[in-house]
Image (cartoon, rainbow, N blue to C red; front, top):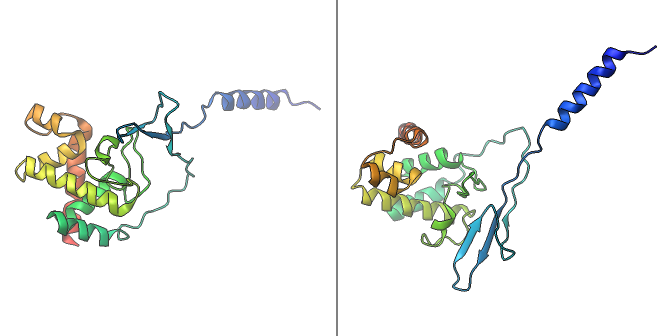
Length: 195
């Protein structure tokens, strides 16, 4: 006995499965030029680039990162640079949700999502090392606080969108992502301040 309806169903299902694209991976490549400058990209343009970080396919189940795991590093960095512990922790929560191996679509790396071009100026040896990343990210945020004379909203906007954008608009840039980011960090900051 044949079941033509079921056979058609399986053929249709098989065709649909073939149309689903495979997951894209965003490996990060790096090379050091003759002047010692590190270059990072997710699209290598030369055979000089070598894989620096290989993105792994993540399982559907989400692993929760321990929000207290890096408190000792946050404490040290906040004291060293004179930035509130709760504020540094709020930035980390908003940036990476405490994932030290996080890599954004734009290539930002680690807990505080350091952009590749900022790694060397911030004296970060390894952007995926929690201490290096937190110390460098806190140093950068302190620079933004000084630049904007303690105006927290502008410093946060500059951390997210860059100081050029903040300078251009002389306020929080009208980018939805940046406006949401400032609100999110402030929400986490108030929550951490309450304890």
